[in-house]
Amino acid sequence: MTESAVLHIRGRILVGPQDVRDELWAVDGRITFERPSGAGEATTLTGWALPGLVDAHCHVGLDAHGAVDAPTSEKQALTDRDAGTLLIRDAGSAADTRWIDDREDLPKIIRAGRHIARTRRYIRNYAHEIEPGDLAAYVRREARRGDGWVKIVGDWIDREAGDLSACWPRWALEEAIGAAHAEGARMTAHCFAEDSLSDLVEAGIDCVEHATGLTEETIPLFAERGVAIVPTLVNINTFPGLADGGEARFPRWSAHMRRLHRRRYDTVRSAYDAGIPVFVGTDAGGSLAHGLVAEEVAELVRAGIPPLDALSATTWGARAWLGRPGLEEGAPADLVLYEADPRLDVRVLAAPRRVVLRGRVVG
Image (cartoon, rainbow, N blue to C red; front, side, top):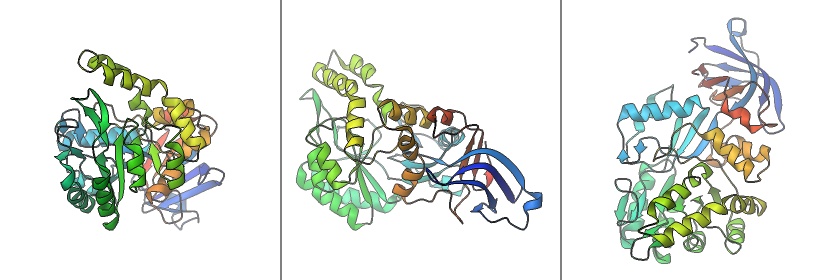
């Protein structure tokens, strides 16, 4: 890390998709575009600068078995940071990671509290497992514990039916989403399948995670209501393996998962074409590794989203959606430097040249 109080970034500063500056300064961890008094002793870095990347679906403090200890959480956060992710929307964690807020060398986290799921309808040790009558109360509690978001599990495998199915009746969703909004929080939901989406959107949901079940009928509804999606395509790529593992016990579920996987790119492109906001999220922290943000951006491009819009989904657009600043006067100096223009080839994101967090070089 550099100990200099003044950092000079020179080259191509991508303040916005088309707003390119020649230089900026970080003074005591804050951005300025005016030459400061201590410029003569500044440390200078060069390259193509982007705002710190956003992973809008990540789980710091969680692994495949539930909550992890602080050293493991720290390692997860450092892995994301070194990949250029400096802002995380933690879409549900059973661990208390508030201590990370006191660490100047770790990414900022926007927490959605702990997952809220139907009894025996989610991964063991992850969620509050409750029944519909308690949903609104639990949503209200997690809204107060989180940072402006709450996460519910909208669908999961019903073992009696042998397939994915919706977890909540419409009335419970209306009560719960109303409770979240009354607390000043936005609500998001895990959804793989088709049959929970209309109820969620019509009940007022703000975002849907994965959204592999979008169809010609529900895409216009999402677009009309402005409901965002976070496709987590790097996670959806695990569906064939999951289907193979469940084939013997749940053949209907396995076939369904394979169908959702096969059409994943068409689903995302159709959502984008309809005007649905699409943002980058990796779903790291369950069984998936951290540090995959560049791979997820590349997946959005493979799905047919134009490179500049895929880039915005992890930078300018994602920060605006989450209410966090980018490369603005007075904002925290959180940025990543690259060798080449990432607008021309998003694969550049896989190789950060320098990572700057709160005005300090950390990677």
